[in-house]
View: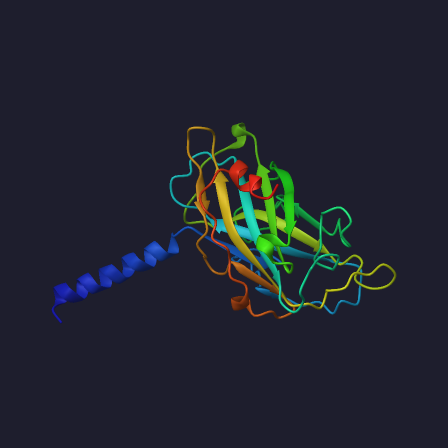
Length: 245
């Protein structure tokens, strides 16, 4: 191989590595973001009503974000070894469900250092919907969450950094004892389907759905490959929400 050809090969390889390193993508991990040492799987003995399990939705943004004002996150959940999640440990938010208040979210990462905290404690929002029996499957759910900050706080994002997006907190309430909900020991996978990064009107929004390190978090040693993410089309958030009314 000539020196010129070898140089071209090495250059192409370096360009590929650089492209992969800076490619936009999403991660979903327990305990912290991917760079912060987050883990894919979480196990729990289901013998206590205390404690909280935290899932971190983080992302590497695409180039060109000049004034990020918010994020819109879509997560899909699938319980493997049961026909339904209605009324069980994974039934959240909706009126009459067993653990209506066991799911919450936050965009306050001021105590975290693993990834970049774009929000600096200034974002507001929450879980906007938890759609059970999603897509006609009784053992599936879709979780929607929105967080936003004032336009005055909006600034650029670096496409070489991993940012915290949303943290989902799942408490262990009603796991044992009187009023306990069944299903804590079920194997579950949770897929970070997509994130929409919003900017002021006229600037342009970005949807990221490519996997970076890992977009699937598992519970009780579920096999990640059994939960296939549902593709999200590049619609407006209002259009997405209208599908589930």
